[in-house]
Length: 165
Image 1: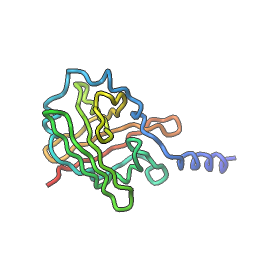
Image 2 (image 1 turned 135 degrees about the vertical axis):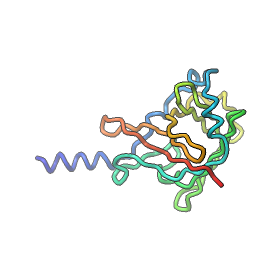
Image 3 (image 1 turned 180 degrees about the vertical axis):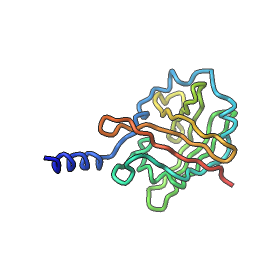
Image 4 (image 1 turned 90 degrees about the vertical axis):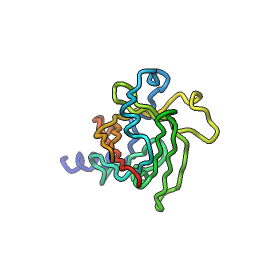
């Protein structure tokens, strides 16, 4: 009996997990009350250096509905704070490359709001985006923390960014 329960638990962990924030409506979160100091602190060019979460050896996470979270390691991100635009590009040789303009902001609750745009698409036409917590902001690094649901439990996915040279 114990073996069958253990096998079921391991099998459940092999299923791909999707970000819990992927269905967040951005209509109500893009308020006029923004955390400008934090936005200015992360303006510039960054490299996503690591993605960590509990069970990463057994669970695959589909980050931002684009690719496996490990494909984001080495991706480049540009954040422009005066107009809340930017760009992100996946460049991992073992994954499909991807590049897209983004629109972003940080609200006064410390939540990073991200919209990934298709070419030529206006941000105001995109109704859904991603909400992530901002943490550990320094001059050279910061983290974005997302949530996933694994077997009914919410787990953190941490994206570690380092300032690009």
